[in-house]
Amino acid sequence: WLLLRELDAGCEEALWLDTDMIVTRPVSRLLQEFPPGLFMVAEEWDSPQPEEVAHLWEAPPARAVTPVNSCFIRAAPAHRPLLERWMEKTRDANYRKAQQLPFAQRPWRLASDQVLLSAVLGSAEFSGVPFASIRMGKHIAQCAGSSGYRPADRLLDLFRGLPAMIHCIGRKPWTPPSAAEADQRFGIDLATDVSPYVLAARKLANDLEMHPPWLATRTAPGAVLRALSGGHPALAGLPLAVAHALYRGLTHTERYTTQIKDF
Image (cartoon, rainbow, N blue to C red; front, side, top):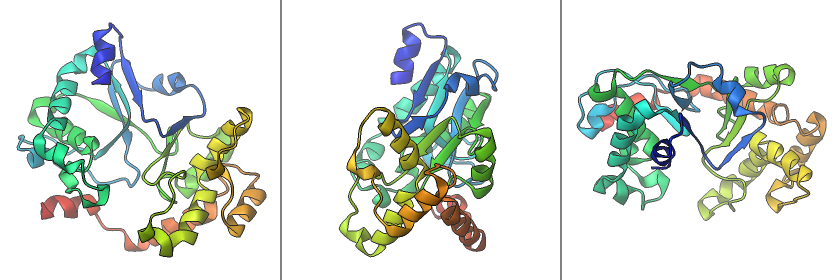
């Protein structure tokens, strides 16, 4: 709706960024890497395989689409029909009903608007619309715990600089742990201490002379990792990212494929 409103106002293009994102440098430089007028989304944090998902919404599928992350969207006037169809699907009664449930309890196809966008992009109606994804590491850090910001990218970023955007996916560092997370409290607190999002926010907060309590360290190991890395958003959490990458490499399953086949 907001993207359409901007296009209605005469903008040559409209850009959406989620509110839980930190921008480290001008996004305009990133956009210059792509052809003007190209529809753009973000790469999903767990690098799922391309899948045909349009049929989940009773639309003829025409191409396999890598499930997208809608934290970043660029649209031009030519994309009005696509945006209108996407908005139409968010008004579906089943979708609206699912949004009243906690995220973990929602059916996968109704989990969020980005599932709907993946379905629209893969449908026969819009299969001719070219689009591109900004990439993890090079363009954006998708901070989902210790995932979404890979060890190799963290090391490269010590030389090339941080990604243009740092996105806080899932649980927010300012949200107190729930009762269900009590037995995982130490792990959550440690991951929060070295979160690239938290450390980037900490620098911005210092520049603005703000000191929200959720930026403070919560664990002794977290304080040590911050001190050893100088609080660098890419370096502090590197040990956790390496451990998670090894674990994921051993236990990885094609989550999206399983969910779609089980539907």
